[in-house]
Length: 427
Image (cartoon, rainbow, N blue to C red; front, side):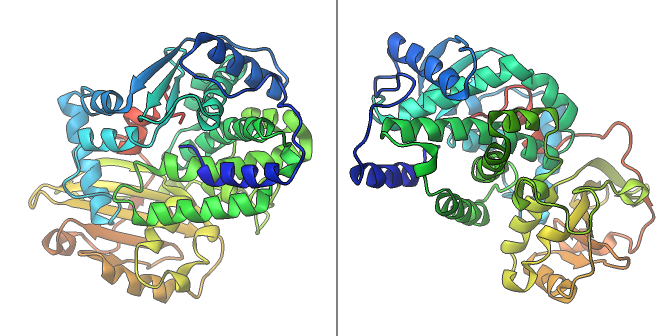
């Protein structure tokens, strides 16, 4: 996902300056050539101030890459898990009702310009038909090489397993490592124009990029399964840039020792204190999962976090009246069930805010935009109950008891499936 807006800004700056030679041996070259690949690996390490890592690079036509992703095999149990999770997300307007695992994987693959595989230890460049000897593609290759460096230095699979325990934490973790790689890519892009990090108008670049990401997420039919693309790069880059401004590359390194705990923290910006002085994210404990009774099959529970709460609200009516809610979200759980009688999906999303909000009435009214949903805010928490149809919704008991998340959740949501294993989608 190359950012043409940044390249245009850098070109305009370079045109007004007397540009020196690029640093770290950077040059525009054909990234299919071995010497170009060697140069990009060395430049990534040089910009980062570490030793280079040599990994294989292959170039794959985009059509083949997408077809391969769409054909990824799944067991019958995985396919059924995807179907049930998708039905719950569709009830909330966060996925197409007719979505399939194959279509979802293909949609993810279309977002990528390249991938570093943390399992195979190699880079795949996805050729969409554009000339591969360009400044943007060299930046892409630098970005992927920075992922190889991260992996060698920090062991990303192990870090991911320890910290990305739910979707919100996974998105924040992705923002950290994608943000750091994107920052290195941006330094390479600036260097190719004879500029430095100080020449980039960061506030303007990040503001426009994040606004664009919000627009894309609001319009996307798959805002959950594509959240890694919408959120990780623009917000992660801003967060890592904040750490870099305070502590240099040592500050960026420190993030890998203590990754952000969720998207709310990343969106607030590096170094921002939680408004109430508490943690950025809390677990809901015994208030996490509703007990709906014997007529329901429990599918699973996950934490979606502030980013996806914001996306959800923007897709309802009159978001302006509810815009203060996502920054207040301290904890949430989305639990999915299947009604054995109707076969319909039930989604119960419990949201805990850090302060009371005058937007609760507007929030309740906005749920009328969903085909079958109700507000069940009988505690200080906001609780959304949505279903595949009104018959299924009307059968859901009001104010059920709650329990902690079971030790072994029945399944994970689509966005924590094939795209969120060790082979994370890294551009």
